[in-house]
Amino acid sequence: MNIAFQVEVQTNSDGQREIVRVECDLTTDPPSDAIEVAELGGGAWEFSFVLCEDFDGTEPVFRRFSRYGLVDEDVMTACSKAMRTAA
Image (cartoon, rainbow, N blue to C red):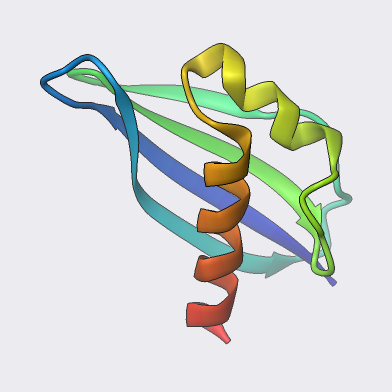
């Protein structure tokens, strides 16, 4: 199975973007390097993407987050924690 992630990000008062929520669900959708981005308004965005359930942080999708002001490793860590919480 693969995992669909939804990562919500907000811009804080210092102008830094912070991950505020990560949700994940099993899916039959194929993993991809693509990220769907939806602006939620007020400095908030939601990023959606699909990974293999045994992802290890080397997937190209993680390198795409720096253009949005996020640290790739922080996104990977947040996704790993969300999976452990959901299990």
